[in-house]
Length: 607
Image (cartoon, rainbow, N blue to C red; front, top):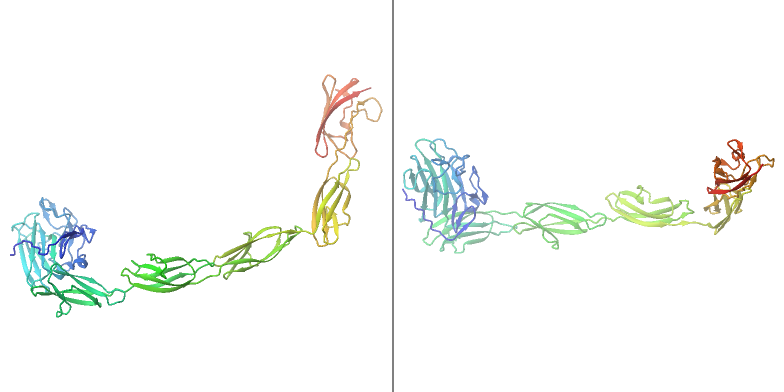
């Protein structure tokens, strides 16, 4: 039996990684984290440590070990007097440790294998809870799987016990005794049994650091990292060198021969892979539109992670594979992968026609008849959507007719969304100028007025029409025109017609008031107090009031025509003839032109 004293020969300074304790050539795995990620109960452990340390875990039955948690219940590693998976008081192994299969059944646990791809100078570890006649066998194996040394731990040996932590280790210095694997097997005569392991430490005299081939060049390299001086290295076992690096190697598998100062030679295996450069799978191009610098390109490459992209060297390298706002032209895009290898691809952003619109021809409106027109010329991308004026309906014709005087904006639109606009103002051209309109208002006698229109700058003869566009006369004077609003149309030989609106006012005719009347006299006034005006002038009597000399209202009526002889005061009061004397009247009238007036005065009644 080998004495369990762990002596690690390659001690230098220690670097804490959060995964394990790493020394130069030496490593301690405590399973609190797995490659920087938090550990959890039940994680299967197989090749998580291979890339960094060349270590694989397995079981002889083809399975893999799992992580157990101190005090945990999901995975059963062992049972102690202090609880499931619970070490003895004072035994601090952190939170997590390695167990065989996490099942406490039977008296045998599947043996564990720790296999390394490069030889070890030493290795150690600790087993948990060796009691109840349990027996553990720890074997170190060479490159062929043969046992180099063996350590057997039996319950009751020093350091064993309920929930205790029992450590073991191997130190080898012989040329022919390099450790490539460790096998752990345990069993008990009766009862449930499980295997718990923690704090596995190992030292490798020499390890490899491989740099794979990149950029389609023969630039692979293998660097040997050793914890001691005096090693020499060879790729063929014949020619040795002190320099620990082999450069400019092609892809393939290599056997590195390592010789120490004592002449011991052992081998390490290394594989160099050719890492292919990034491949451009597709270049998705969006050409410019509407003559703008708005092209874009998307580079689809594989692998797509870790690349940077630049265009023609003038665009700063970026992680996004999309470039926007590109003008038309030919481009070269460079894709630089994480190994600084560059792959290039060419593409072209095509120009497009900008929409343009210009005025081809226009004609002004004439005499306000809405006869103006505009025609346009345009450049656009086929197919044409159409033309519009002042955001109106779209039409295919470039000609707009029936336009009046005003400001217009004309727009062309094409099928790819390009638009262009231009503006123009149309004037109203006339050939007839109306200088003045002379109006003679109607009089109170005949109620008729006259209109005279003075016009100039006509094209040809001028003719006139009153309130009609059908009958015209050469004379510019219209007599015997009734009161009210009239329109005189002035027309020339070019068809220009100018309307002139005029007003013949209603006359304000006088009202005549008598100062005496006699109800019993036969003097032609029918014996009533009547006011009068011309026969053709109608006045509405709004209020007609008669007061005696003491101010008493003795007669009232309203709303009758001045020509209504039946509504006037006949000189009575309550159907009794009023006394002879002076009376006061108050009369409010409404003229035909809408004007209201109030008249008051004296009227003498005689008999």
